[in-house]
Image (cartoon, rainbow, N blue to C red; front, side, top):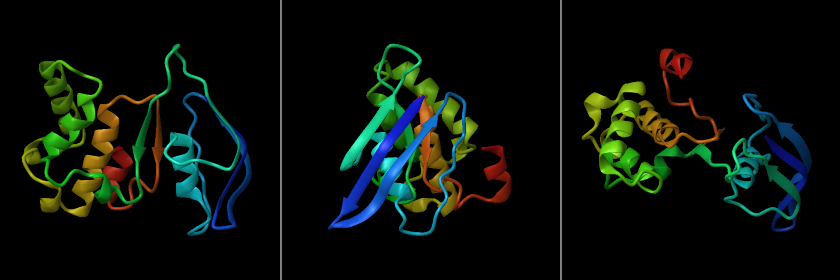
Length: 167
């Protein structure tokens, strides 16, 4: 569960987020909808711990005794891909911090590539991918790490209809 209580955030004396409070329970899907520039992406970064906020409280209650681990897919997913690594290398890198044994990591990368239908493209670099394939890579990289929850910022914007439905 994630609980936000009275979250405030401002930039250059301009209030971006004001008094946001809500709970997200296990297995619950929550959508945040609003106009461009209203702070949706900022709020996701705050929840992930990537951005500081001015006031309020965020509580992550893990199901186990450990710290929770988010899977994040950014709106500008192209900027989060490592251009010097292949599709395979991007996913392998995402797992390298948590799965030390290379054989186990290789198995997880393979499973992910099959799940996102990019196994046949595993040796391509991000600049060789279509927008949809690059977005699939970003999704696959987040999914491969088996996060406790996902923070998705327009995660299907470049995907075709059938792929979005499947995911």
